[in-house]
Amino acid sequence: MNARAATIKHVELSKGMAANRTVQQVRQSAAVAFRSALQVILVIALTLPFQVLIGVFFDKKINTDWKLALKVGGTIASIWYLVTFTSTLVDFRKYDRINAARAPSFPATSFLTGLYGLTAIVSLALIKGLNAEGDPMWLQLLPLVFVGIAFYAWPRTIHCAELSVWQRDRWGRKTDIPYQSIQAISVSPGGTTTVLGSEVTIEHTPQHVDAESFRHFVSSRSAKPIY
Image (cartoon, rainbow, N blue to C red; front, side):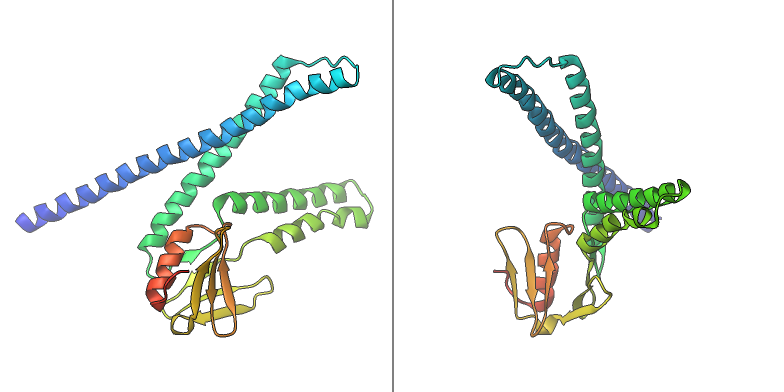
């Protein structure tokens, strides 16, 4: 009976801790999104006086619809807030799964995943629409350029397996570095973490999630310091 009560208490405590962490992550995501949206509002607000100054400089009267500008600016800032809040919160949840995994993976950030994914979807929708309109073939295939850009720029997922860290490139070729073969782990001023093997390297860029956990995991597995 005592063992069962202790188990129930442990489960309830774990749920409580998980709920508190979720609340904390929501608050942090909201704070990050608010600062980002505030920057957008400030940029938009600063551009409006420049329009008046340009008109004065060129001796032209420019009529500025301040109400419309405020509505447009508020709409853009609100959309940016939602996008930033959602992507930040999703990344926080990814951090928890990464820390709990024995063989974690480090994909692109949620913001980039959504951005490149949306680019590909919109491009394919444009191709379908142009085809339905009977436009020339070269024009129908033109949106594939944006699909190619998204495919090329998409950060490839880095996998930390039991014995090695590995990643596939854009053409599916696998780069594998056993932990015992890692020669150095360095961090650039821009935040890119480079894992140097005997012949190849793997880079965890700022476009990948959870750089801190990646560095800790690779360093502890390889027994190599971080420079």
